[in-house]
Length: 370
Image (cartoon, rainbow, N blue to C red; front, side, top):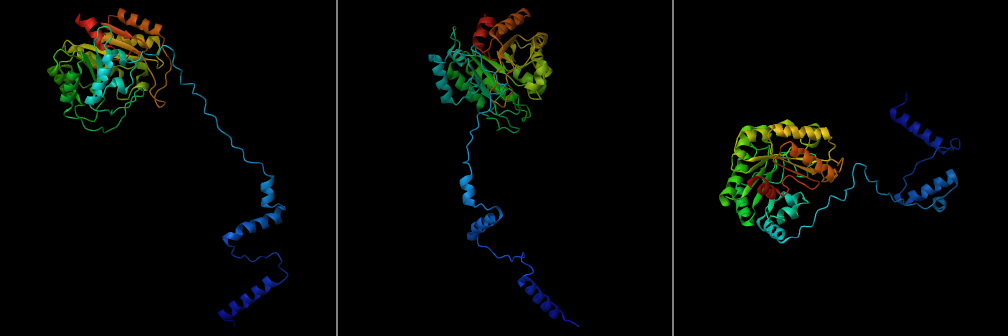
């Protein structure tokens, strides 16, 4: 009987004899190669296999060519701006004065935030020297994400500043405006969606400067009538809420919580309160709406007894937002102004550069108070 030790020794001895014999010439014993010897080993292997060294290979290879990629072609969705979308520079004395006051008082204006092309006319005062500005309250962060708007969004914006009503009223009184437009972000995160805060700002403005004309461009307050009434009965002169677009395109343009019929109901409800204030809305053109779409929207607004409507060209704020489908001509804007006036609106402003609060002071004084 063989023991285990003896079996191991016999097998080991046999293996050594086999490796050293000439009967197995193709069996190689692998040795550990140092890192420094690897390049040499690779040269030797290539020489045996192909007969070409690395040096020969490198010498015979063509130099690597650097190919510069051209910029991608301009997207067909981005339309070049036409010549009529130009505004005169803002350089009047009154404009410079108001701009300086904005900086000193730390006010946020939609005029500057949205880079409104009409800032020179509105802040400068125009022919009647009636200066108009649009102040944004309740912060700069919205709880909604409309596809045309560049205002930043969040589900939980910072809390409201309880001192803002007094601050804004004091600043406006110092500013010397005749007409002010207040607007705000949507605040769906708040129990009253900021309606009481909005009301307090308006009331403080009337206390500081009783003859100041105040327009409030409000959110839809989710259609809750008690919140709408809270702002509508605050003493303002114009209650504005924007439709933004026609019914067919509302779900593509606005946040899903902003509904066409809901916005109509806001305007209709304000009018039913008989507070004496005007109701106003704005529609942007250039999203791909048809004439029938626009005409239906005007008919819906008259049914809601809306007093004022404005038309302006939609301009894409960034590449992430909805592209412009069409740059509507000045002649077409004139057409819609004529059509709206025939329907019985108190006042219509329509043009490529017209915005919601465009020259609001001139409008109010010329077409309502007089």
